Length: 332
Ligand SMILES: Cc1ncc(COP(=O)(O)O)c(C=O)c1O
Image: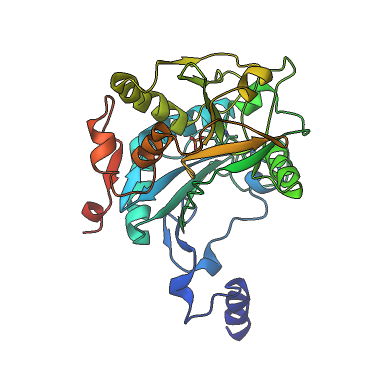
């Protein structure tokens, strides 16, 4: 027992019994256990899980903003699409997965954070083929996250790391090595992110974000989602843009191929992802991009999508709304 407690203590790392409430990982669900784990030392995945040694797993996220779980259905749709493309059958039906994620988010007591969840081929052996004895596993973790807006904008570079082929770029699997190397390549050059450009010279996406542009003719432009991850935030952006069109500050939206020359000549460039959710790019490959950093539209997008306290009001009144689950109701 003494040794066992010592091992648990080591696995807790820097989080002692006294500081455990400050830990970023607040709660984990594992289908192998069938319950919620609160001790970070026990938030582990087995070494023989195919997610670990073969990368045979898919994942997705959802943000907790002001005590609301944001846009979960859209993320769950993509999650299950990725699972099907990776030939992983979820151990539970969709509504059960959703219920677990909502309960986990509520159990975490986080007002601001992220929920990450994975479907793995599961543990059982070290072969290439999925294990047959055990079923696929579902894991989810609630993480305290602070959102940094960076209103001054960020710098990006064009990535030299090869893009994933479309079949793999369009599913959200745990195979993120190209994305990791692309992010590291950017950081090594003092940039926030690297941008992939495909072999035909069309802009694609960043390592963990989509990209969007506002043309000088005031049109919102997004690359087609056939070679990149179809972002839930990018979909929201398209919905929200309809308001700007009604207000006359945008002329229209288009989802199409965008050549790098056209992209670099935009009035604005934005990084778009659940974690950001919208961030201005002001410099690309050492050259300034965009002619107005503080444009009203940009702030409009940010205020509508960001962690400001309008999550409750905003998504519900947009067409196709109902994007928030209030977690307070699930804690009782
Ligand atoms: C490669 C990649 N592209 C785009 C995105 C943006 O997707 P979303 O808006 O759904 O967060 C992500 C986010 O995880 C990503 O990893």
